[in-house]
View: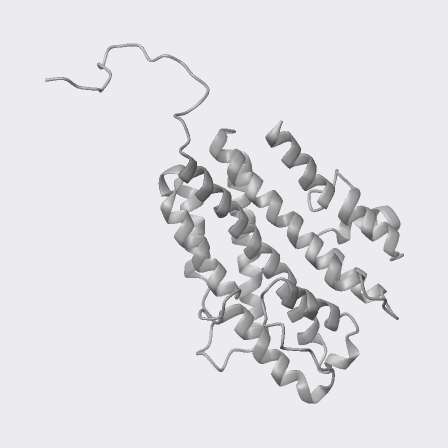
Length: 272
């Protein structure tokens, strides 16, 4: 009998690289990175809107709401024909659209449908990710359930779900950075994340800042919160919100892990 297994007593040749990475596996890892990052970008944008709506009963009192709504539409989370109409009487319609953008499994671009795509893609490369990473993705999928039956979910309930998702997504990212060897598989996974985060930042800024605003401070504050950069901005500039400083932090600052410049620098390191 002929066996391809190494004899038990034969020394192992030390190496730093694993086996060759098939192109199909590389593609799946790349898209897993993109989809996980797409989920996080959607969660952060939706959560930002929900926080504002749960603290204010009149959408007309939120000047940052129309730009953020456009951002959701531009990113495909809500249909483009669902125009936001300001006023207290339309709050119910806004709630319905937001909850559908989160929980409607049949809606293309919804958070639920994107999360399903994450789980499908991860299952294909199950043998390429760690047990703990797989557990986190399973927990992310398992805990993504509205606490009330469909039609009875409150915005506060949805907000609690999104807050828990942020924790799970941070755990997955942390394991990827601290536990995954820097092989070709990790490179493709990380390149997917960097490209998707770049696109999210570009879409977000284009949707919110291209049109002139009478009161831009609330919009700038929302952008910093979505990009998880509020603390950095306050540390540098205290409480003064200015467009140039916000753009510098979110676009050019390569020390900010959420900036476009940081993503491009990371991509450059991967391809060099």
